[in-house]
Image (cartoon, rainbow, N blue to C red; front, side, top):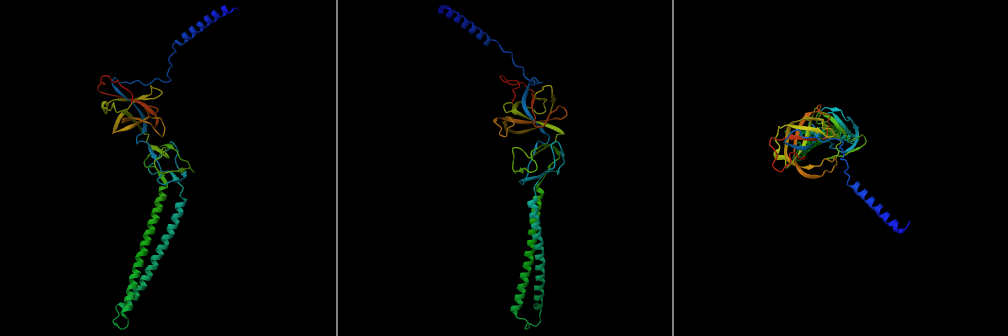
Length: 322
């Protein structure tokens, strides 16, 4: 084929390919269908907020006041604990050995008291022999004074020995108190929501990002709703509110107003990370509902719509989610 024929053919082919590519790029792609439809507000005027489900007594993070190796764990997730029931115990061998030493020290101090009392009785009898002697020539004044001083010294030794007994008893009480604190008990009745400690692990003191045990009452559940500070003025207590489970907008239930935490706090984006990001400030409102109404769990995020009695101001969306 001649060059004069090849060039026009290549130009025509390139034009066709360019036209086809342009046609395909202008073709609209079908919109992706969401896995789950978002919840729709059931009210014409409302405030939308995100919330997190809590136990009715809030989620109690259990820690230990004395660090150490965990000896036993007495509960598991789902158990119902009574107030004062042992949850886990720290290794107590060191403190029990210390208790034995202090009990021996107490026995020694008590024996010292008896010895001091016996010495006191001897000093008193010696002094009594010369104190009331009618014949002043039988005993010198110096001897009388020495025996008097010996009695005073014996009295002081008895008092010192008795104080030593009290100190030993205080040491024993302190050690027993520390032994008692090695057994971590439930501060109130509730359900064990999490167990993050095992026998043989080291339990640290202080505020931990992951609590050793998490406890809460699930007879009734609470929802902590974050309302953006820009919408806080529109909120009115005791108005209707509805909660929707994320992932299935058909799972919903009305909730009852419980209380407002009047201090506006920095909002943390609910990422589940130990270091949450702060982006704005929110008013936290607590609602309650029966746990049997929807299959909800403590720690779950939900969408909440709160009815407002007045319409939003001009230029403001009816229910922007905080």
